[in-house]
Amino acid sequence: MSCETTLTLGSFATGELDDAVAERVALHLEQCPTCAQAVESSRSNWAEVRAAYRPGRASDALRSRVRWSTRLPEPRRWPRVALAGGAALIAAVVLLALAALQPPATRRASLDHLAVLFHDAYVNGATPLDLRTDDAAALSTEFSRRLKFSLHLPPIAGPDLTLLGARLVQVGDELALMLAYRQGKDVLSLTVSPQSAAPLGAGVVQHFRGIDFRSSEQGGHHVVQWTDGQLSYALVSSAAAQTGTGCGICHAPGSGLSNVDDFAGGG
Amino acid sequence: MSGHRNVAFDAAVLPLLDDVFDFARHLTGEHAAAEELAQAAFARAFEAFHRFRAGTSARAWLFTIVRNLYFNDQRGRRRHPTISLEEVGDLGAALEEPASDQTLELDQAIALLPVKLREVVVLDLQGLTCREIAGVVTCPAGTVMSRLHRARQVLRGLLEVPARSRGVHP
Image (tube, rainbow over all chains, first blue to last red):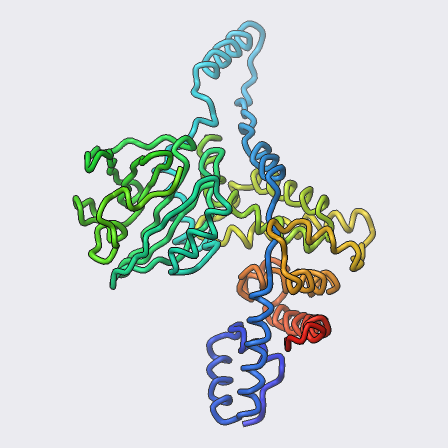
């Protein structure tokens, strides 16, 4: 078998080849130490470059401008109906009266609604995680710098539960955090937001250790929301509501939580 | 329905502002121009959000908008600015945390790439797959692979001297 081109080897090293070509290259590498060394070298060099890359962050001023420019209500499209004289005037008055009675277009969305959108956007691959890690302490440190509240995530050590990472999300006018976990075959997400950013949605209320937990079903997901101090939480999972055992983040034996207050951010 | 559109846009698109700004700063080479481009891209994305297909990559969709706006603007101006090492200071200013020496060198090196190599390498560093990059820059995946390979070669060459001067092998 002849040696591969450096282009093919470089692409193989960074995982960019189609499966069929990658398979062919992998077979070749088993027999060719020179190409294997070239792949390893290419892989480690590019890994160093990736590690050194620090993406720029949008300034708060830009964030505000973008948020403002995407808050404008859509222009109303009036029906193209030819009305004449008094009929047009009457219709216009009626339409204006109806428009005045409509609720504001930018009414604040509830936390459960937003959390389901964040969850679906992540699961569908539309919004990947900002930081992929199962290190709760590292994740708390990283995002506490970027959020207006501090995080104290407990170490999760359940055999069936893994912290996948997190990404910043926008809740109302505030930055919030969506944490992603894998429990068995399911992906769970937990959105942690300043309490003032969005109201909790409706749901069946269960009072437990001084906190009201609201459970609801939305779009095939089970959602549990609660507020504790200055922060609100919304847990989205595919699990059916099961009191006390629905989610391993808090209820697994390895979660390390003895009290609901252990899972909290600072104010 | 505008309230619903706002909520959906907030969930799928607004969290990607940092990514869009990062791509824009590498395309334009100037902090102010990058902010202008990112803002214009979000305004365009908001207008066209009804065309975004749920389940597809919002990042790739946004990067396509950024790129189209940038190149349309360049075609309109009939000029293609080049970036000097002195101008790269603006890129460093966009970093929130003090950047390591190596980071600034990497930013400087990326800024020196021709735009066709620069855009694919930044999209790669942003985590897009080769196929996604091909969709954004509208060329075959093989061409993306070739450009990425060339970009890495050039970057390795550009990063080698600063790294060696610190006694670090690249």
